[in-house]
Amino acid sequence: MTDPARTDLTVAVLAGGLSHERDVSLRSGRRIASVLRDAGAAVEEWDTDTALLGRLSTTRPDAVVVALHGGEGENGAVQSVLELVGVPYVGTRARDCRRAHDKPTAKTELLRSGLHTPEWVALPQSTFRELGAAGMLDALVARLGLPLMLKPDQGGSALGAHVVRDASELPAAMVGTLAYGDTVLVERFVEGVEVAASVIDTGDGPVALPAVEVEPGNGVYDYRARYTAGLTRFHCPARLSDEVAERVADAAVAAHRALGLRDLSRTDAVVDADGRVQVLEVNVSPGLTENSLLPRAVTAAGRDLAEVFTRLVDRAVARGAGE
Image 1 (cartoon, rainbow, N blue to C red):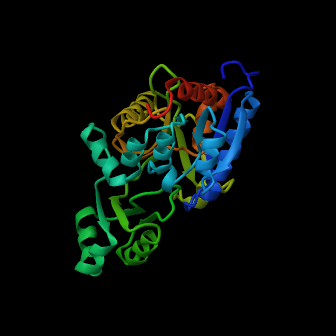
Image 2: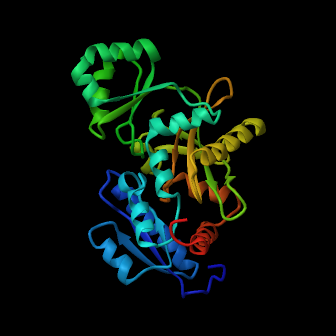
Image 3: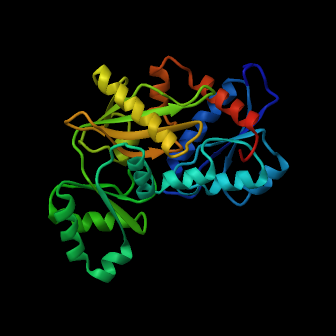
């Protein structure tokens, strides 16, 4: 796809699915499909349903772009299917998607690589039931202090995430988080500048794009703040000193490498009062909607989203399936 007039390359964009993030995924899929069409590719938009395997067999695109968020689009399941049937795709390998998607596992890997991440405890719902919820909640506050951040151990878009500033809020927040999964990740809430640093690799190694600073109007970058126009202010590049901005970029590339990610990723972090970059989580399938952070970073870097994704598709085709 280096020639924008080329139309002999067929790309399937997978979006939708059955996760809680279906609507956001569909918006991401429509945008990237439009970008690739404008660049000259023949693009089909596919949902991930029972027709998927048949389509892959009969149509067999040259490459797939996975624009799925949450669930099987980020936990490696869909990537495993693509590897199984031998169709090249843009994005991280299935085995590494699984590692990044599980937040406690990813945080352990980040710590091993020397990165900072807020102290945390991950507990399944059964633990609260079997050992007593009241005692467990008291122990969490005693160990991690307040405020706390609660989030499901898997998933994205801040669904099920709650900031708890008073111990009386903890029981309801715990119930709300467990509505999105069987295990809750409880971590020490870090005050500071919230940033997102996207990483792309179009052939010369992973490169961090300018970080986006997130300034939600209500102080919490929750689902509404992420996807409702006007509720959050974005600053790109982030309002950081050159030294701190470089640390953010280095942390994003280090996280990308530590988790074995491929093609693109987005690292969400907080720069704390001491200037440390505290990595919150790493996303293997960053959003591509009109409010998403990766497209803002691409623009700030003086790049074009079509150019970035056409090169990623070229790389996927060149390396073949399952590599």
